[in-house]
Amino acid sequence: MIRLGESFFGRDTATVARALLGQRLVRLWAGQRLSGLVCETEAYRGADDQASHAYRRTQRSAIMYGPPGYAYVYIIYGRNYCLNVVTEAFGEPGAVLIRAMVPEEGLAVMETRRGASGSDKVAAVRLRHLTDGPGKVCQALGIDLALNGTELCSSQDLFFEAGRAVAEAAISATPRIGVRGDEETRRRLWRFVWHSA
DNA sequence: GTGACGATAATCT
DNA sequence: GATTATCGTCACA
Image (tube, rainbow, N blue to C red; front, side):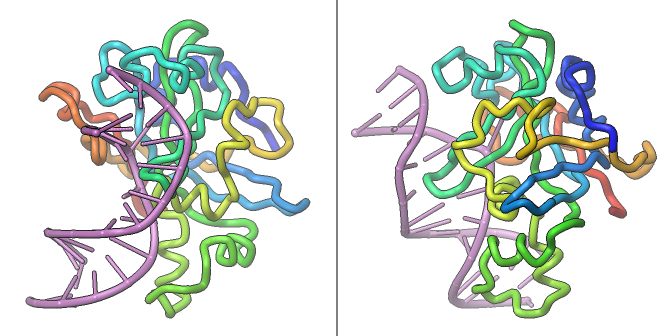
């Protein structure tokens, strides 16, 4: 399998967000492969993007200014984690939020990690909602703050592999979910969705 | 299927 | 002390 390297991530953030659709996100958990194909992403930049953590440089967002290919994991609303990949050349802030994936390997483990409780009792419905949100992806893959700063281009625990080619016609670009900021920030089409996955 | 709401803690001012 | 790149649950359709 071909792993995605620094040259893949060290590009314009929106370009990387678009190119990540169809790529495989792999997590090694208890010696087993958990994976899925990325099907929803969002691009976040720096001083030109009011919705980005890197709009201002802080201790937390400093990693977005660093070299590409690193994991940026943060906790949101006190209970959920979000996984990002740092983009752009060193010194230029940027990251892509992994919002959703189509689960493939390690289904049983991921379902256990997501918890069997809840109203989704039908297997097909459970599968549909297994990894259809940024916090859900992290739950299923067992990603928390311990993985913040992981080098995704060399780590054995978390990385990307070349996946499936995605047709342009199967991609939608929309405004990002749940972001604040001025009109231009909210209007930008920096969320990318791969349909028919 | 959609929409409202509360939980909960790291991070920033 | 305020804010938050979300999720699960509940009500309703």
